[in-house]
Every structure is written in structure tokens, then in C-alpha cells.
Image (tube, rainbow, N blue to C red; front, side, top):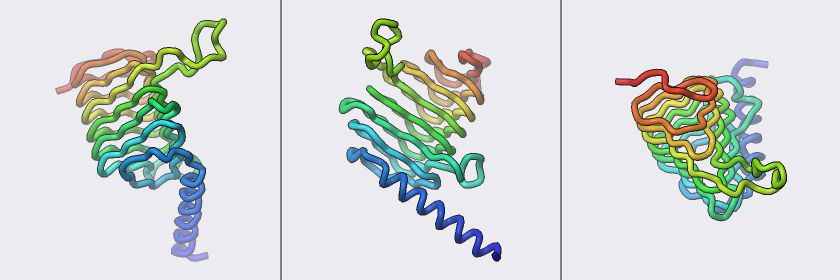
Length: 191
């Protein structure tokens, strides 16, 4: 098989995967358009809003061929919004019961997850109930989120900040800082 035929076959298979996951998406409250290099599933009863030039998936990056992005605005009140010029690497997850706001010019690395809820009550007697208190997540403009980062409910990451790879962010941080770790801590200020 020639190299050109192999590339066309791979492109066709990826096209079929993207169409399958688009078909599996059940959220009709999507506003705006995005460019999907990787399959994307959008689910839930809430609203998902895309600004201009939102890109999901990176061809020359790990997990391109075998994963997909998962975006769920779970409740009718939930909103997930992406600003303009947002670039998201492969295997991204965002699940909201209230609100996740990703502002303009944000870069999101490989295998990142953002959640605005614990999804289940932390009280052992109510563990099978949904989280009674989801809290909004805000990623301000020009934030760079490294690979394998998890951002939890109630977090705001300030403008121009950088989140180191492998971090678990469970509290808010100001603008122009480098944060990292599990749980994430302030490493230093950025110029």
C-alpha cells in the first residue's frame, strides 16, 4: 500500500470516527462552531457555547487516534463556554452542573479535565445523591494549562497564568503566576 493511500485511509477512518461521535452527541443547545481534529461528544441538557476559532484535538500529539473529547453540560442550568482562539489538545473532558467559563486565547494540554462539581455528595449518608453545591470554574484569558491537569469546582485561574503538567487545581490563583503540584501551589510569579 502506498504512503498516499495509507494517509487517505487514515483520514477516512478519522472522518468516520468524528461522524460517529457527533451522532452519539445528544446536546441540541450548542451555539457557535468549533474545528474538530479529534472526535468530540457533546452531551447534557445545558448549553455549550463556542467562540470563534476554537480547535479541539491536535493531529501530531499523543492520543489523537484512540481518544475523543467529552463535553457535558449536565443540567438544564449548566453552561460551558469557550472564548475565541482556544486550542485544546487530545482527550479533553469538561463536565458542568453549573458553569465552566474558558476565556479567549487559552491553551489546554493533553488529557485535561475540568469539573465544576463533586457529582456526588461527600456526606456518606447522601453519597448516592448529586452534589448539592456545584461551583463555577473560570479560566481567564491567555492561560496555558499543561498536560494531564485536573481543575476542580470553584477554581478561578487568573489571566496569563500557567498550570504545570500533572497538577490538580483545587483552589483559585491570581493572574500572572506559575502553579503546579497535587494539590497545585504557587511556584512563582510570571513577568
